[in-house]
Image 1 (cartoon, helix red, strand yellow):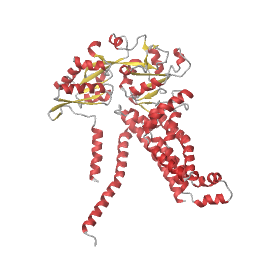
Image 2: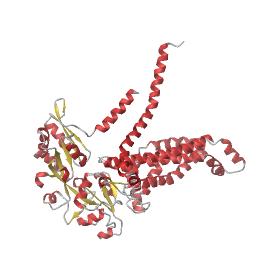
Image 3: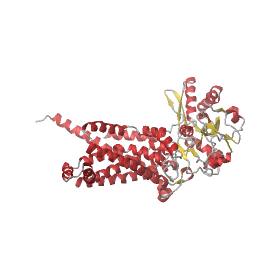
Image 4: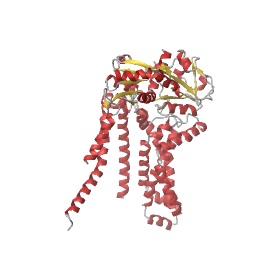
Length: 288
Length: 272
């Protein structure tokens, strides 16, 4: 028989741990409630259409259009994917299929380190090196869609690599052995058999990478130039949803402040949709 | 659970509560003076407050940023003793009594290598409203102008709009940076950039442009030749009480004005 004291203690510990586990839910709920309470009134006041499809952002004069920023957010996300996707996938394939144990022991911790570098450092390096490089060799001010895409492309690498790596590793050995036994080369086996088998995991890694790119703020403010127009080319500056909030919150009050929270509501919706898709894709992978 | 809830609630209270002082508070027998407003004026006020508290230890001066508009609002609601503004008051805000503590010039700056050394006010207006977009139109090479402005709500931007382009809006294609420092960084590194910033921030890394033939400097502002000048204002609801008065008097005294002068600002009494 266990003493009563131990049983009570056990029960208390369980209660405390449960409370801790559910507190994350509470914080999520609080953040949701806070953003919606602050952001939704403006949608009623100005009209959903005038905010989401409005072309002009001048909150102190009553214009709250964030359409250019929605477009810009998608553009940089797409740009980040174009740069970070192939690079990340290549790295994951190398790690999973080609790397020996020694290469792996060097590369894996290096990637974890890359994930741990604060975003402001990426932004700083972007301003110091990438922006002047683009200005000198391609023209424009350097603060541009291209610079932002490069910086974000590097930032999403750890996400893309680690999730695609897991997906590739979960492909059964028998697939590879079968392909090799049929007389295929290693690359043929990888390209025709292993990657297609890990397709949905790789797709999920890209979607999660996109989520990271959409939400990134500090590095983007530093290299994007923050102009309000939809960029006409790779070398034009642009402003994303996140940088709009961070840029103007310090001074904003009244409707201006509400406008920034409305931006937050739109951002939250986009990220929720992205996460939902990533989950669907991952689940499809699991059930297969 | 209860503790977590309490902590979360506390966070919310702190978040929503900051920036809202109250008038007439006391702390350990020391009288608190609450000041809030323009982020341009705040660093100077903070410096003045430090010196003031050394001289008069019976006071605690609380300085908070928030922007000129927020400072004016807070002053009207009597949540602060003194409001700070870096732009002139609008007609409906004139109920407050204002004290000019000093003047600050706004310099239009380019890269030191830029051969364009003088512009007219109309040219500056056209650059920022998007009508002039190429340096060729200003007599230099065929290259797009990389103009930089400040973010919506900034006091410097407000004053710039009011003084340079009262009728036009700043074009959407123009880059935005969120502080005097970032604007300076862009102008100092990009040979084709142009931007505006507080005169106190100008050093050898950027070149201030002569507007209508007048170079921006302390002399030109004192003689009222350089026109892009804004006041740094202290605001009070009605006449300031004895305690707010003590701080304002200190700022306007010789010591206070000397501190401001050392920071590159133009003392009030020399300008008016």
